[in-house]
Image (cartoon, rainbow, N blue to C red; front, top):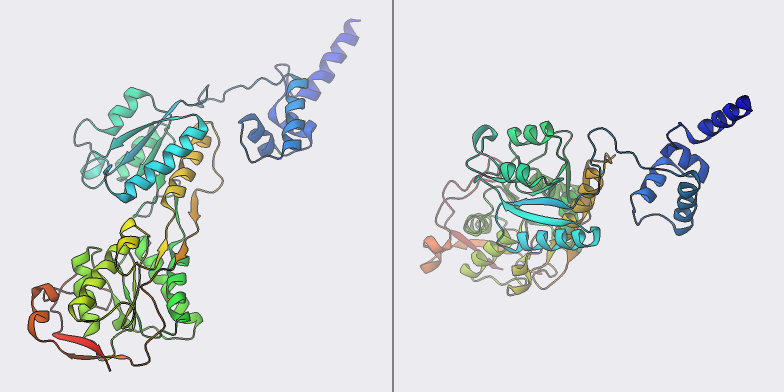
Length: 405
Protein backbone atom coordinates (compact mmCIF):
# COMPACT_ATOMS: atom_id res chain seq x y z
CA UNK A 1 0.00 0.00 0.00
CA UNK A 2 2.84 2.34 0.83
CA UNK A 3 4.37 1.61 -2.58
CA UNK A 4 1.02 2.23 -4.30
CA UNK A 5 0.60 5.54 -2.45
CA UNK A 6 4.10 6.60 -3.43
CA UNK A 7 3.43 5.69 -7.05
CA UNK A 8 0.18 7.68 -7.02
CA UNK A 9 2.00 10.68 -5.53
CA UNK A 10 4.74 10.42 -8.14
CA UNK A 11 2.19 10.31 -10.96
CA UNK A 12 0.41 13.35 -9.53
CA UNK A 13 3.70 15.27 -9.29
CA UNK A 14 4.56 14.35 -12.88
CA UNK A 15 1.14 15.56 -14.00
CA UNK A 16 1.05 18.82 -12.03
CA UNK A 17 4.75 19.74 -12.12
CA UNK A 18 5.60 19.76 -8.40
CA UNK A 19 4.38 18.62 -5.01
CA UNK A 20 3.26 22.22 -4.34
CA UNK A 21 0.83 22.17 -7.25
CA UNK A 22 0.71 22.63 -11.01
CA UNK A 23 2.88 25.13 -12.82
CA UNK A 24 1.51 27.50 -15.44
CA UNK A 25 3.22 25.42 -18.13
CA UNK A 26 1.26 22.35 -16.95
CA UNK A 27 -1.98 24.37 -17.01
CA UNK A 28 -1.25 25.46 -20.58
CA UNK A 29 -0.43 21.91 -21.69
CA UNK A 30 -3.58 20.45 -20.12
CA UNK A 31 -5.76 23.16 -21.70
CA UNK A 32 -4.07 22.88 -25.09
CA UNK A 33 -2.94 26.50 -25.21
CA UNK A 34 0.34 28.41 -25.03
CA UNK A 35 1.80 29.62 -21.75
CA UNK A 36 1.25 33.32 -22.68
CA UNK A 37 -2.43 32.55 -23.36
CA UNK A 38 -2.81 30.81 -20.01
CA UNK A 39 -1.13 33.82 -18.38
CA UNK A 40 -3.63 36.16 -20.05
CA UNK A 41 -6.55 34.18 -18.62
CA UNK A 42 -4.93 34.14 -15.19
CA UNK A 43 -4.44 37.94 -15.31
CA UNK A 44 -7.98 38.64 -16.50
CA UNK A 45 -6.96 39.99 -19.91
CA UNK A 46 -9.85 40.66 -22.30
CA UNK A 47 -8.07 39.57 -25.52
CA UNK A 48 -8.84 35.83 -25.09
CA UNK A 49 -11.57 33.91 -26.91
CA UNK A 50 -14.47 32.83 -24.62
CA UNK A 51 -14.01 29.11 -25.38
CA UNK A 52 -10.28 29.33 -24.66
CA UNK A 53 -10.94 31.18 -21.40
CA UNK A 54 -13.43 28.50 -20.35
CA UNK A 55 -11.00 25.64 -21.05
CA UNK A 56 -8.16 27.29 -19.14
CA UNK A 57 -10.42 28.17 -16.21
CA UNK A 58 -11.68 24.58 -15.96
CA UNK A 59 -8.11 23.27 -15.87
CA UNK A 60 -7.12 25.84 -13.22
CA UNK A 61 -9.99 24.69 -11.02
CA UNK A 62 -9.51 20.97 -11.68
CA UNK A 63 -5.80 20.98 -10.88
CA UNK A 64 -6.12 23.42 -8.00
CA UNK A 65 -3.66 25.98 -9.34
CA UNK A 66 -2.43 28.48 -6.75
CA UNK A 67 -0.70 31.57 -8.07
CA UNK A 68 2.73 31.99 -6.53
CA UNK A 69 4.40 35.42 -6.78
CA UNK A 70 7.85 35.45 -8.32
CA UNK A 71 10.81 36.97 -6.56
CA UNK A 72 10.64 40.72 -6.83
CA UNK A 73 7.14 40.68 -8.35
CA UNK A 74 4.18 42.34 -6.63
CA UNK A 75 2.04 39.98 -4.55
CA UNK A 76 -1.24 41.63 -5.49
CA UNK A 77 -2.70 43.64 -8.31
CA UNK A 78 -1.46 47.24 -8.06
CA UNK A 79 -3.94 49.78 -6.78
CA UNK A 80 -2.08 52.96 -7.74
CA UNK A 81 0.29 54.24 -10.44
CA UNK A 82 1.83 57.66 -11.04
CA UNK A 83 1.56 59.92 -14.08
CA UNK A 84 4.31 62.54 -14.32
CA UNK A 85 3.73 65.45 -16.72
CA UNK A 86 5.64 68.62 -17.48
CA UNK A 87 2.50 70.72 -17.04
CA UNK A 88 -1.16 69.85 -16.41
CA UNK A 89 -2.25 72.68 -18.72
CA UNK A 90 -2.74 72.69 -22.47
CA UNK A 91 -4.52 70.46 -24.98
CA UNK A 92 -1.77 67.83 -25.12
CA UNK A 93 -1.81 67.32 -21.36
CA UNK A 94 -5.60 67.16 -21.44
CA UNK A 95 -5.58 64.45 -24.09
CA UNK A 96 -3.04 62.41 -22.12
CA UNK A 97 -5.01 62.73 -18.90
CA UNK A 98 -8.20 61.66 -20.67
CA UNK A 99 -6.59 58.54 -22.14
CA UNK A 100 -4.86 57.52 -18.91
CA UNK A 101 -7.95 58.03 -16.74
CA UNK A 102 -10.24 56.10 -19.08
CA UNK A 103 -7.86 53.14 -19.22
CA UNK A 104 -7.25 53.28 -15.47
CA UNK A 105 -10.98 53.19 -14.79
CA UNK A 106 -11.32 50.08 -16.92
CA UNK A 107 -8.37 48.44 -15.16
CA UNK A 108 -9.52 49.38 -11.66
CA UNK A 109 -6.43 51.47 -10.94
CA UNK A 110 -5.97 54.79 -9.20
CA UNK A 111 -3.74 57.42 -10.82
CA UNK A 112 -1.78 60.13 -9.04
CA UNK A 113 -0.67 63.05 -11.24
CA UNK A 114 2.63 64.79 -10.47
CA UNK A 115 4.36 67.71 -12.17
CA UNK A 116 8.00 67.24 -13.16
CA UNK A 117 10.44 68.82 -10.74
CA UNK A 118 12.74 70.44 -13.29
CA UNK A 119 12.37 72.58 -16.45
CA UNK A 120 13.92 69.89 -18.64
CA UNK A 121 12.10 66.96 -17.08
CA UNK A 122 12.50 65.16 -13.77
CA UNK A 123 15.69 66.12 -12.03
CA UNK A 124 18.30 68.77 -12.67
CA UNK A 125 21.72 68.31 -14.29
CA UNK A 126 22.92 64.73 -14.06
CA UNK A 127 19.51 63.59 -12.84
CA UNK A 128 19.78 65.31 -9.43
CA UNK A 129 16.44 66.39 -7.96
CA UNK A 130 15.78 70.12 -7.74
CA UNK A 131 13.65 69.64 -4.63
CA UNK A 132 11.15 67.20 -3.17
CA UNK A 133 9.77 65.89 -6.44
CA UNK A 134 8.17 62.82 -7.92
CA UNK A 135 10.88 60.29 -6.92
CA UNK A 136 10.50 61.12 -3.25
CA UNK A 137 6.71 61.19 -3.51
CA UNK A 138 6.73 57.92 -5.45
CA UNK A 139 8.81 56.21 -2.80
CA UNK A 140 6.58 57.54 -0.02
CA UNK A 141 3.34 56.46 -1.72
CA UNK A 142 4.55 53.03 -2.76
CA UNK A 143 3.14 53.40 -6.28
CA UNK A 144 3.53 50.29 -8.38
CA UNK A 145 4.68 52.03 -11.57
CA UNK A 146 5.04 55.32 -13.42
CA UNK A 147 3.88 56.85 -16.69
CA UNK A 148 5.84 59.81 -18.05
CA UNK A 149 4.56 62.41 -20.49
CA UNK A 150 7.74 64.44 -20.84
CA UNK A 151 10.23 65.25 -23.61
CA UNK A 152 12.50 62.67 -22.00
CA UNK A 153 14.17 61.53 -18.80
CA UNK A 154 17.70 62.27 -17.68
CA UNK A 155 20.10 59.28 -17.52
CA UNK A 156 20.07 59.65 -13.74
CA UNK A 157 16.32 59.18 -13.61
CA UNK A 158 16.43 56.10 -15.82
CA UNK A 159 19.09 54.67 -13.53
CA UNK A 160 17.03 55.53 -10.43
CA UNK A 161 13.95 53.75 -11.77
CA UNK A 162 15.89 50.70 -12.92
CA UNK A 163 17.80 50.54 -9.66
CA UNK A 164 14.59 50.56 -7.62
CA UNK A 165 12.93 47.99 -9.90
CA UNK A 166 10.01 50.32 -10.71
CA UNK A 167 8.23 49.62 -14.02
CA UNK A 168 7.70 52.70 -16.18
CA UNK A 169 6.46 53.64 -19.65
CA UNK A 170 7.14 56.84 -21.60
CA UNK A 171 4.23 58.47 -23.46
CA UNK A 172 5.23 60.10 -26.75
CA UNK A 173 8.77 61.16 -25.74
CA UNK A 174 10.43 63.82 -27.89
CA UNK A 175 13.91 62.40 -27.21
CA UNK A 176 14.88 58.87 -28.13
CA UNK A 177 14.67 56.63 -25.02
CA UNK A 178 17.62 54.43 -24.04
CA UNK A 179 17.61 50.71 -24.85
CA UNK A 180 15.35 48.77 -22.54
CA UNK A 181 12.87 51.59 -21.89
CA UNK A 182 9.26 50.96 -22.89
CA UNK A 183 7.44 53.75 -24.71
CA UNK A 184 4.34 54.43 -26.78
CA UNK A 185 4.35 56.92 -29.64
CA UNK A 186 2.94 57.48 -33.12
CA UNK A 187 4.09 56.47 -36.58
CA UNK A 188 5.31 59.95 -37.46
CA UNK A 189 7.20 58.85 -40.55
CA UNK A 190 4.05 57.38 -42.02
CA UNK A 191 2.21 60.56 -41.05
CA UNK A 192 4.74 62.70 -42.91
CA UNK A 193 4.33 60.52 -45.97
CA UNK A 194 0.53 60.81 -45.80
CA UNK A 195 0.70 64.60 -45.49
CA UNK A 196 2.93 65.03 -48.53
CA UNK A 197 1.00 62.37 -50.45
CA UNK A 198 -2.17 64.40 -49.92
CA UNK A 199 -0.54 67.49 -51.42
CA UNK A 200 0.86 65.48 -54.32
CA UNK A 201 -2.60 64.07 -55.04
CA UNK A 202 -3.86 67.66 -55.34
CA UNK A 203 -1.30 68.34 -58.08
CA UNK A 204 1.31 70.20 -56.02
CA UNK A 205 4.94 69.67 -56.98
CA UNK A 206 6.57 72.67 -55.26
CA UNK A 207 6.08 71.50 -51.67
CA UNK A 208 8.09 73.09 -48.87
CA UNK A 209 8.53 71.79 -45.33
CA UNK A 210 8.63 73.72 -42.07
CA UNK A 211 10.62 71.24 -39.98
CA UNK A 212 11.78 71.29 -36.39
CA UNK A 213 15.37 71.48 -35.23
CA UNK A 214 17.68 68.90 -36.84
CA UNK A 215 18.27 65.78 -34.80
CA UNK A 216 14.92 65.68 -33.00
CA UNK A 217 13.48 62.16 -33.53
CA UNK A 218 9.88 63.23 -34.15
CA UNK A 219 10.80 65.97 -36.62
CA UNK A 220 13.29 63.77 -38.44
CA UNK A 221 10.68 61.01 -38.78
CA UNK A 222 8.13 63.38 -40.33
CA UNK A 223 10.74 64.80 -42.70
CA UNK A 224 11.77 61.27 -43.70
CA UNK A 225 8.15 60.48 -44.54
CA UNK A 226 7.92 63.62 -46.67
CA UNK A 227 11.02 62.65 -48.62
CA UNK A 228 9.76 59.09 -49.07
CA UNK A 229 6.51 60.40 -50.58
CA UNK A 230 8.44 62.63 -52.99
CA UNK A 231 10.66 59.72 -54.01
CA UNK A 232 7.64 57.48 -54.61
CA UNK A 233 6.24 60.18 -56.93
CA UNK A 234 9.55 60.51 -58.77
CA UNK A 235 10.17 64.06 -57.53
CA UNK A 236 13.67 65.12 -56.53
CA UNK A 237 13.81 66.93 -53.16
CA UNK A 238 14.83 70.59 -53.24
CA UNK A 239 17.05 71.55 -50.29
CA UNK A 240 15.88 75.16 -50.36
CA UNK A 241 12.34 73.94 -49.66
CA UNK A 242 13.29 72.48 -46.25
CA UNK A 243 13.47 75.01 -43.41
CA UNK A 244 14.58 73.93 -39.94
CA UNK A 245 14.03 75.91 -36.77
CA UNK A 246 12.08 76.26 -33.55
CA UNK A 247 8.49 75.13 -33.44
CA UNK A 248 7.16 78.49 -32.24
CA UNK A 249 4.67 80.34 -34.41
CA UNK A 250 6.90 83.40 -34.85
CA UNK A 251 9.81 81.34 -36.17
CA UNK A 252 7.51 79.50 -38.60
CA UNK A 253 6.21 82.85 -39.83
CA UNK A 254 9.73 84.06 -40.59
CA UNK A 255 10.67 80.84 -42.35
CA UNK A 256 7.52 81.01 -44.47
CA UNK A 257 8.33 84.57 -45.53
CA UNK A 258 11.77 83.41 -46.65
CA UNK A 259 10.23 80.59 -48.68
CA UNK A 260 7.88 83.06 -50.38
CA UNK A 261 10.92 85.08 -51.47
CA UNK A 262 12.50 82.20 -53.40
CA UNK A 263 12.71 82.50 -57.21
CA UNK A 264 10.19 79.63 -57.38
CA UNK A 265 8.05 79.89 -54.23
CA UNK A 266 6.26 76.75 -53.05
CA UNK A 267 2.60 76.29 -53.86
CA UNK A 268 2.09 74.14 -50.74
CA UNK A 269 3.53 74.02 -47.22
CA UNK A 270 3.84 70.95 -45.00
CA UNK A 271 4.27 72.21 -41.43
CA UNK A 272 5.57 69.54 -39.05
CA UNK A 273 3.28 70.86 -36.30
CA UNK A 274 -0.04 72.66 -36.17
CA UNK A 275 1.61 75.59 -34.38
CA UNK A 276 4.03 76.00 -37.28
CA UNK A 277 1.11 75.84 -39.72
CA UNK A 278 -0.62 78.71 -37.92
CA UNK A 279 2.61 80.71 -38.12
CA UNK A 280 2.57 80.08 -41.87
CA UNK A 281 -1.02 81.38 -41.98
CA UNK A 282 0.18 84.66 -40.48
CA UNK A 283 3.00 85.04 -43.02
CA UNK A 284 0.69 84.36 -45.95
CA UNK A 285 -1.84 86.89 -44.65
CA UNK A 286 0.88 89.53 -44.32
CA UNK A 287 1.80 88.99 -47.97
CA UNK A 288 -1.83 89.14 -49.09
CA UNK A 289 -1.97 85.48 -50.08
CA UNK A 290 -5.01 83.27 -49.57
CA UNK A 291 -5.17 79.81 -48.05
CA UNK A 292 -5.74 77.57 -49.96
CA UNK A 293 -6.45 79.51 -53.18
CA UNK A 294 -2.83 80.69 -53.47
CA UNK A 295 -0.95 78.36 -51.13
CA UNK A 296 -2.13 75.11 -49.51
CA UNK A 297 -1.09 74.43 -45.92
CA UNK A 298 -1.16 71.14 -43.99
CA UNK A 299 -0.22 70.70 -40.34
CA UNK A 300 0.62 67.83 -38.01
CA UNK A 301 -0.89 66.87 -34.66
CA UNK A 302 -4.55 67.96 -34.85
CA UNK A 303 -4.56 70.29 -31.85
CA UNK A 304 -7.92 71.95 -31.06
CA UNK A 305 -6.65 75.15 -32.71
CA UNK A 306 -6.51 73.30 -36.04
CA UNK A 307 -10.29 73.12 -36.19
CA UNK A 308 -10.78 76.67 -34.91
CA UNK A 309 -8.48 78.37 -37.43
CA UNK A 310 -9.79 80.10 -40.53
CA UNK A 311 -9.73 78.28 -42.81
CA UNK A 312 -9.90 75.11 -40.73
CA UNK A 313 -6.51 73.41 -40.96
CA UNK A 314 -6.01 70.14 -42.81
CA UNK A 315 -3.68 68.12 -40.62
CA UNK A 316 -2.44 64.68 -39.57
CA UNK A 317 -3.92 63.44 -36.32
CA UNK A 318 -1.65 61.90 -33.70
CA UNK A 319 -3.82 59.76 -31.37
CA UNK A 320 -2.47 61.14 -28.10
CA UNK A 321 -5.33 59.87 -25.92
CA UNK A 322 -5.01 56.40 -27.43
CA UNK A 323 -1.23 56.51 -26.87
CA UNK A 324 -1.78 57.34 -23.21
CA UNK A 325 -4.36 54.60 -22.77
CA UNK A 326 -2.08 52.06 -24.45
CA UNK A 327 0.77 53.10 -22.16
CA UNK A 328 -1.41 52.61 -19.06
CA UNK A 329 -2.44 49.12 -20.17
CA UNK A 330 1.18 48.24 -20.90
CA UNK A 331 2.26 49.49 -17.47
CA UNK A 332 -0.54 47.50 -15.84
CA UNK A 333 0.81 44.30 -17.36
CA UNK A 334 4.39 45.17 -16.43
CA UNK A 335 3.62 45.71 -12.75
CA UNK A 336 1.82 42.36 -12.74
CA UNK A 337 5.12 40.74 -13.69
CA UNK A 338 4.88 40.56 -17.49
CA UNK A 339 7.87 41.57 -19.56
CA UNK A 340 6.76 43.20 -22.83
CA UNK A 341 8.14 41.45 -25.90
CA UNK A 342 8.06 44.73 -27.84
CA UNK A 343 9.26 47.85 -26.02
CA UNK A 344 8.46 50.30 -28.82
CA UNK A 345 4.77 50.75 -29.70
CA UNK A 346 3.73 53.14 -32.47
CA UNK A 347 0.09 53.88 -33.17
CA UNK A 348 -1.20 54.88 -36.60
CA UNK A 349 -1.70 58.49 -37.63
CA UNK A 350 -4.42 59.58 -40.04
CA UNK A 351 -5.19 62.47 -42.35
CA UNK A 352 -7.88 64.94 -41.23
CA UNK A 353 -8.89 66.85 -44.37
CA UNK A 354 -10.41 70.27 -43.76
CA UNK A 355 -10.28 73.50 -45.77
CA UNK A 356 -6.63 74.61 -45.96
CA UNK A 357 -5.62 72.46 -48.95
CA UNK A 358 -6.83 72.61 -52.52
CA UNK A 359 -5.65 71.69 -56.03
CA UNK A 360 -2.55 73.55 -57.19
CA UNK A 361 -3.38 76.87 -58.83
CA UNK A 362 -3.07 77.05 -62.61
CA UNK A 363 -0.85 80.13 -62.23
CA UNK A 364 2.19 79.47 -60.02
CA UNK A 365 3.51 82.01 -57.55
CA UNK A 366 6.40 84.32 -58.37
CA UNK A 367 8.42 86.54 -55.99
CA UNK A 368 8.09 90.33 -56.10
CA UNK A 369 9.70 93.03 -53.90
CA UNK A 370 7.86 93.72 -50.68
CA UNK A 371 6.63 97.23 -49.94
CA UNK A 372 4.77 99.13 -47.27
CA UNK A 373 3.92 97.62 -43.91
CA UNK A 374 4.57 94.08 -45.17
CA UNK A 375 8.32 94.68 -44.99
CA UNK A 376 8.35 95.60 -41.28
CA UNK A 377 9.15 93.38 -38.32
CA UNK A 378 5.63 91.95 -38.17
CA UNK A 379 6.17 90.59 -41.62
CA UNK A 380 9.11 88.52 -40.54
CA UNK A 381 11.99 90.95 -40.71
CA UNK A 382 13.71 89.04 -37.91
CA UNK A 383 16.02 86.03 -38.13
CA UNK A 384 15.27 83.07 -40.34
CA UNK A 385 16.22 79.36 -40.31
CA UNK A 386 18.43 78.29 -43.16
CA UNK A 387 17.28 75.69 -45.67
CA UNK A 388 20.48 73.68 -45.48
CA UNK A 389 19.39 71.72 -42.43
CA UNK A 390 21.65 73.53 -39.96
CA UNK A 391 18.64 74.79 -38.01
CA UNK A 392 17.65 77.82 -35.98
CA UNK A 393 15.90 81.06 -36.85
CA UNK A 394 19.03 82.99 -37.82
CA UNK A 395 19.93 85.22 -40.73
CA UNK A 396 17.99 87.94 -42.58
CA UNK A 397 14.66 87.36 -44.25
CA UNK A 398 14.63 88.24 -47.96
CA UNK A 399 12.64 91.41 -48.64
CA UNK A 400 10.38 89.69 -51.10
CA UNK A 401 6.88 88.33 -51.29
CA UNK A 402 4.99 86.19 -53.74
CA UNK A 403 1.91 86.76 -55.84
CA UNK A 404 -0.05 84.72 -58.32
CA UNK A 405 1.06 85.33 -61.87
